[in-house]
Length: 608
Image (cartoon, rainbow, N blue to C red; front, side, top):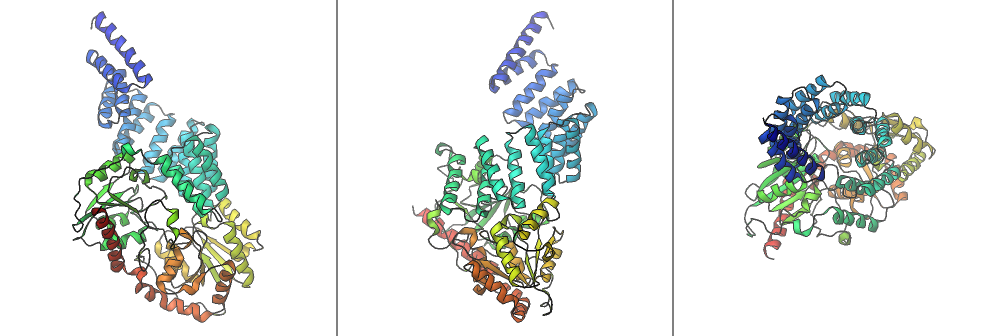
């Protein structure tokens, strides 16, 4: 190469760097290409061109340029790391793992490589390997806040909340304005039931990153657990989510490639992160399995990161299946629009993994959110959209396939065992105070609580302290951690005489499980939303005698049942058959009613 061409290439490279630093990616790409045309063996130009292509969303071409840079300079750890990251993003997990290991062979103290390798192991479900990788990252870089945060996530998944909190806080000592760590810290506090501190943490994080959708969803879900939180204020908070996160009108779809025929077969799309072994799955499966294929084509958009045998079962109920992990909201919306979905149904609300922002693009002419709401008449003022109510019950329960038999009623001489398997975020101080009054009112009665993390010292001590502040000795409490199998989990209900429901956020799966195992569930019904779920379930079974309308009535109903061993025995012996014959488990009938609601909404839209 002559001096003139060398000078030209060097100048172009400097120009490309300047454009790159200014954020002019199109200009930088064009100029880097001019460099590699003059200098095909320039590894830096190939590497940076790969960076630009990745930033512009062309992962495949980014990989090609990173491969070229690595071929030209195979011992450059930065080049190999970039290739590994791009392969990881493209879902080529095996090759990405191999390249991360190549980075570590070249640079054994690369904290970034260890973090990314840990992320990859986590995606593959190898949590022990992920934890080891994060530990190495922290060893080599004690200020790597990503490593602290991601290791905290592994600990949280394992129910080790006290340790997880410390790792999140360590990340925040390094980077106090890191919204991801704040979000996960608040999630962990919610898991422990510390709702006050969780809310403060969420609101602080939102000030730092107002457009973080997951953060705002988590705050809204946290507020639903708060006793006494003003419902109008809660409505306003939900509206704020729409204002801040919903896309502009100019970005929404206003036309759809579909036919306005009120009676034709409809293409029905379901969006969920819970097509897996999860409590929500008990209420989705019956619906998917019983749709009339002559009337509806079912398309599932699954945001399930770790698929399992339940996922495989769900796939058999869908005519088409799309995995949405890694898809942005606009990409998901475009896919739904391209698929010609007539009616799109959200099955997550503001729970983890939801894709509500994608719905704001309006990729389908009709969109619903379903599951988890049991609103009374007159609640329409708290919604910006039309409410559809289903006769019988708002959901359909699919009993676990491996449920053990319900035990016979416990001997009359045995001490009464009360119980709750609800999430700790529902065990607020008001709930614990009321349950403590019941324990005081029933001499010798004990309370069995089961939930992941009750083996965690900080979490357990917090729960015990709340009961002790209400005069209940820890000897009257039995705290159990997570058990591995559904069979063993359900078998624990055979030790319980009466289940105590939580408020203001009722149980759903826990209520159905207890009843399926023949255990009476006493609930305190409220006025709104999740405060009425157990009421709806018990109404469907015709046993509203278990529904209380005040704290005093709640105590009276539990005490009355505790004194009536015959009634408890009747529940044990008859409840499963009663449920199986009730609207709560009538999968075919429920699905027909659900389909009728969808068809009615569709016909109304067609007539517009």
